[in-house]
Image (cartoon, rainbow over all chains, first blue to last red; front, side):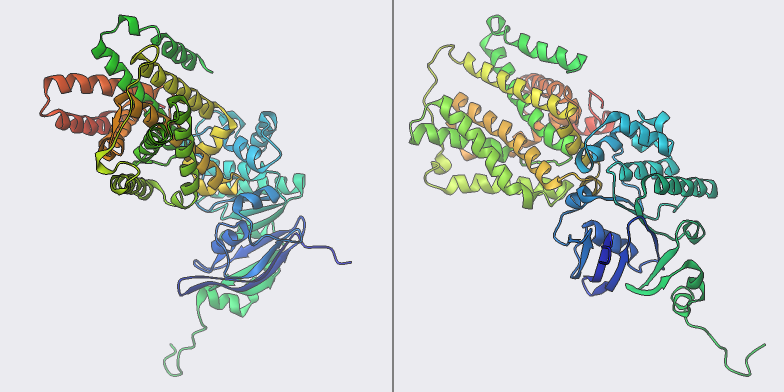
Length: 248
Length: 296
């Protein structure tokens, strides 16, 4: 018997008014796999994540998680099933402490609040020393780390990461990359990374999906991506040949 | 309970010993202060911890007050039975309207609750069984303790509301509310059932506010739509809360007592510009102590 995919997205479409943001998007994610989703701005990447986590409901198509249709489940129910996510613009509980930021998802989305375990997670992401500081006072790199800590605290089966490298300097990018590798090797969690920083992305994933105007235009390994004519067109536009006689 | 919370709790208990030392005037001022305290503490659960400003919370004051009064007058139920029913009706009504109402946020939510308050006021003024614009007369309380009973009722209600606030401040239940206040979308994706927790928080506010309205109705023995759905009372609750410090357990108490005492002094000395001074006060609070006297 064929083994069940962890996440299966089937012909998902979504419009906002007359703007079709996702057009029949289908893909699967296997247990423990790391998948990259890339695409120009406005191609529907974040909307796709929002559909997966239930913040936005698709117009048609279905999402299966561990073989179960989750279309009608609310975001908090999906979180409890094992979906952890981070946001492009960090959404921390700014007036609460770093530790509290991890305790809350543990209690409501995970196996129960456990201060020792929360501290271990903070040690893993390198924020243990700052555990009593208010989350609003952290730097961007620290905020991204805390978002990661919060997402893994629910012991997810899949981590959905929305531009986790965005806005970081090269050193921080490398550090977060190492952290992701560590999380993956220690927990075996599957990951979906929506990303613009391709250099970092290609170091961690073997399979990418390219979205353009809500459609999947490429699916495969990172090497093939740069060679795909469709992808080049989506990023750089049509090939332009100047008419004869005008060439210099 | 922490050190401060225990201190405030004992101070509140100690207030119960005050009445023999008080003149009728000060007894009334303290009773009013306690009423405002209970209302501010109720609103604090919603605004301070959950981040939803129910500017029309007095709607529930009216529902509680009218339910209590109607049960006493039409069904002949004793006050001690009518009052809790009034509180429960108010809380249930809140639970019912919360899921659609709380899709709105910040000022949209605030204005919609205010509209609810005004609409309910109009409705009550135009219905027959509520006594219309003429209101309802209630029997005067003649049991043991005389009118002091209302001082103690508001004191009890304030202590109850205070303990609820302490619970919210320190429990995992409170964590869910705070998470909603900080970022609702994030809270939802972290596993918090936001609709449920928002509704419960809203209904906790409505319970205390409704009970407060019930006690008030019996205290003044005559209620009408203008007094029970008074927008000025909403303003007062919010000023007390902002003055004291939103999202703290001590702030609402501090704010309510300061405001009520200040209000009495101003009312006595400058009856004509009382409203102006109150308005100036709001401006000054926002400019000088935007987070209130008791800072978070």
